[in-house]
Length: 140
Image (tube, rainbow, N blue to C red; front, side):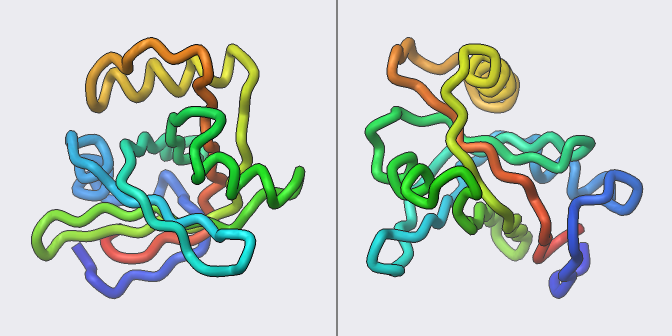
């Protein structure tokens, strides 16, 4: 682990086995989204990461503050960050997030969540915040 790594994008050829394991182990993370007034909204979440696609996902309810913050940015999406910490090991992923509501995207995100955490409870208002990762900080 290189604690000071800062890299553009999420190149599957450059991430370590340790990075892959870190983002596969069951642990909560934090999502930071911008509020309308520009202040950060920070909330604990479950995060899944598709390294090959360069996409992190967070499932949530359509009416949650985090989903509303991302949706308020419009079709271009909002700049967000997701982080995980485990003692001295940490990693932050930054990127542009959008809210996906289509059944295929939600089902895919639920499947990924179930693999990392547990089967999510039934939620007809579920959406997925999809983050196109363009910057990696921390371990790589």
